Image (tube, rainbow, N blue to C red; front, top):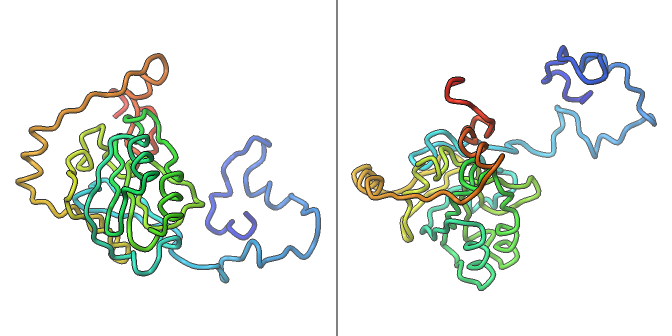
Length: 234
């Protein structure tokens, strides 16, 4: 935080009763001569472009990817959609080697309203990488990812499928382009065809109760943090 303080609002109050700036200034490191090869200063980063925000007809309200973890040959990738409506379905397919080079795994109904809550999708991506698909197949989802992931993956697609986002309208075999260089996520389907699919789209939410039912009813989109937003607060 010492290195990052020029990027932080150091005036905010913290649980110590002091501002963030005061905490940083008063903290006594347990040793001197910190190894700045482990936590590097801003003028000497390990790399740039850790995260990227994508937009396009498949993510009108944005999506998130990690360029630093994506192989160079996958930073502008077009593949055919293989669609799954739950993590369980996708995991089963990956485990029996159904995902092939050139595929874009579409994992939907995993966003704030869909689960409800946003599941961690690292399991599926890590298995794809383990099967040698890191530089030949991709995964896109309205769920979320761990920072430890690598391979071509895009998460937090908004609006999510459960809210009627375009991700819900994708069909097996559709062509999808993930262009990290231009920050674009594109479904190669005409507006007319998407309008037809939307008119035919049906969705039955998962059964849930108590707090999770309340959360699903009030959860905002992932691009807004998935926070609870009552209608009158909009």
